[in-house]
Length: 454
Image 1 (cartoon, rainbow, N blue to C red):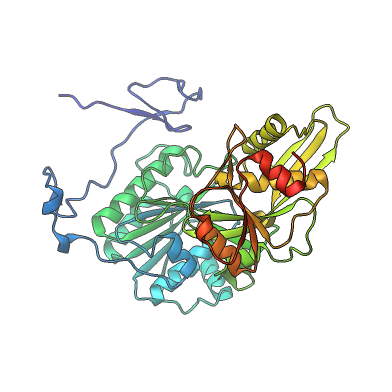
Image 2 (cartoon, helix red, strand yellow; image 1 turned 30 degrees about the horizontal axis):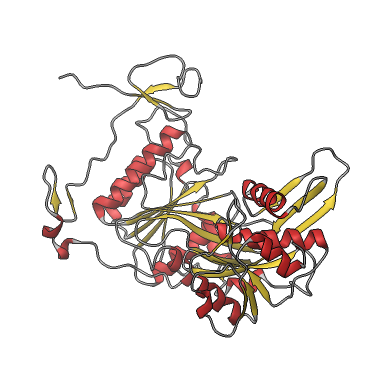
C-alpha cells in the first residue's frame, strides 16, 4: 500500500491530505509544505512494555519505573513541580520576553547540578560567553552546569545522546531549527517538530527536559497551542514589570496539582523565593480606605490573601467605562448586573475600575463577594474594617454559595492578624476558631448587614 502523504501549513499548523496554494484554515498563501518524517523514532521500551505489545497494568515491573523525584532546593519551584523534578518528563515554561525565564532556569539548573543531577543548559539566544557573564552576575559561575550554544536540532540531539544528561534545559524552543522541516525557525511547524523530538528523547533516555517558550500577544505559547499537549507540565511565569515579584503558575501537571503557584522576588542578585506571599501582597496596605477589601483566596494548595481595590466615579460619557486588572472582565459585568437586578443598586452613569493589588491574577469565583464588597464600599464611600477578610461565590439569583477550603482561608487570615470574616452560610467555616464570622444568606442580606441598606 502506498504511503499516505500529509501536508502542513507553516503559518497555522493545520494539516490536510493534499497540497494547495492557499491554506483552508488561515487563508495564507504558499505556506503548505509536505510533512517530512521525524528523525527520532518511538522508544523501544517504556515502563516495562515492549514495542508492538501491551501488558496489563498489574503486570508492570515496579523496578522498571522511573526513580523518584529530584528536588532543587528551591521550595517555590519544587512546590509548583508537584514536589520535585520527575525523570523522563517534558516541561514547558512560558512567559513574556524579559520577564525572567532564563534567570529562573539558570538558577534552577545550578541548584539541580549542585544537588548531584547531571545538567546541560542549551541556549539558542545567547553566546556561551554571554551566559557565563549572566551566571557571574548571579553568583553561579562555579556551578557544575554544562553549557551548549546551538540552534541545530540534529546537532543538539547528537550531543544529548553522547552526554546523556539527567536534566536538559532548552532556551528557547522558538530558536530551535530542524533541518527536515522546510520553514523558518520559530514557525509552528518548526516548534512542533522540535518539541516532539525533545519530548521523545526525554521518554527514551529517562532525562527531564525543560523547554522555554515565549508568549505571543494573544498570551499563548508559540502561537497556537501546538506544544502544550505534547508535554507533561506547563508552567507560566507571570508578573508586571512595575512590580518586583514574579509568579510561577502551573496550568498543567501530570505529576502534581495544577494551578499551584510559586512566588519569587526580582532582586539585583536574581530571583529570591517568597515563602509567605500574603505578607508581600498586603505590604503597605495602610489604613482602611473606601473600595479596599482583602480577599482570602486559594492558589493550588496554598491560601493567599490579596487586596482588591475598586473605584466608582461619575462619568460624563454616554457609555460608562469598565476597567479590570487581574480579574475577569466578564465576571465583573455579571456581579454588577446581579447588584442592580437583585439589590436595586444601579451603576449606570458610573465608571467602574477594579484592580488586584500587586499584579496578582485571580481566576476563582470565590472572589465574587469580595469584588461586590469593594464595589459597594467605593460607591457608598464607606471603608470596611481593616481586620476583615471576604470571600464567597455569587449566583445569578443573588444567593451566596460557600466555597472550598474555607478553613484554610480563615487559618491563613488569622495567622496574618485578621479577626473577622464575611463568608456565605454553609460549608465548614463555622469550625474555625478565633475568628468572628458574618455569614449572610444572600446578597441582599449582605448589603443590609455590612452597609446598612437593603
